[in-house]
Image (cartoon, rainbow, N blue to C red; front, side):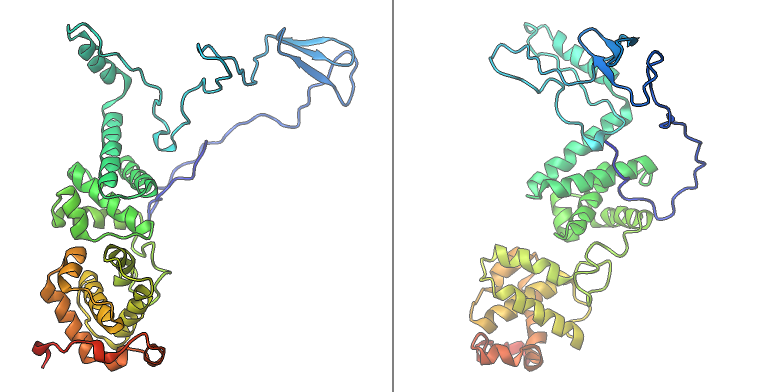
Amino acid sequence: MAYSQPFPLAQPLQKVHQPTFGPDLAVRLICPECRDPNPHIVEEFSSGDLVCGTCGLVLGDRIVDTRSEWRTFANDEGDDPSRVGAASDPLMEGMEQLDTTISFRDGGSGLARELQRAASRSSASRSERNLLQAFRDISNWCDQFSLPKTISDIAKQLYKRSDEEKLLRGKPLDAVIAACIFIACRQAHVPRTFREICNLTHVSKKVLGQCYKALEQAFNLTPGASQDRHSSTPSGTTGPEDLLIRYCNHLDLPPNVQPICADVIKKARELGIADGRSPVSIAGGAIYFTCHLLGKVKPARDISAVAGVSEGTIKLVYRLYYAEREKLVKEEWIKDGRASLDRLPVDNSSK
């Protein structure tokens, strides 16, 4: 099955297209005996002949039966249509997808291990083995991070494209995989921070940033996948609104907290409050502010554990929001009884 190439290069190379040749679809097969303009050709697969249904002339022999044969050679009764193995994997296109498994039962002689090693060397080239190993690492890390298979497939596609174009030669394999997972999360609208990816893969933030910048420039990923979701968020960055849903779920907050918190963040951005702070810090401080505003108090310690920032940073953003609380809180929230400015605690350090 043909798939369009994922992650095309920002500046694709100019390739000379060779002329292609195909069958002439205007040619029709007719019987030379009866010369019927509307021939009735019958394929008799039992005898392997191509016969004219009008006069019975044999037009061809030894034709190939292209139909599905639903014969089963299993010991169990019933039809067994799974005779051709699993479905083909588009990520493995151009590679041999049929493998041979050698049993470990060799009586303790060690012969099976030697046969497996020889089979692995002869079945695939070094590049294919490296690609398969990278795919396994991506799957394992995505499972550890509780990421869906969609993100794993996007990361595999991105890694395969970077390997084909030789974009990250000399970079550690773990760093390349970490950058692919980071970009895949953004493409699937479930972004993760650099700190979370670094804690998962144990890759330094500097090397991860280098690999990410190289992939971003090569595949023109600067606008990002979330450019249409938040018009006020600068393109190419992960906004605090993208982190709110996950943080609120981990904190077991009611559903009405997340939209109000998102409105507070957008209004603060318009007023220039807490500009220059990281999205993680803004998200944590906004959740702390909104929880007190709605009476759903969460201690800063719990928010710090979920967001991965210190309690001091969360309270610093809260103080900035508290100073402009009358501009951030809508009047309709107060009239509906959902919010109350009296619930906001006064931070002594803000005076």
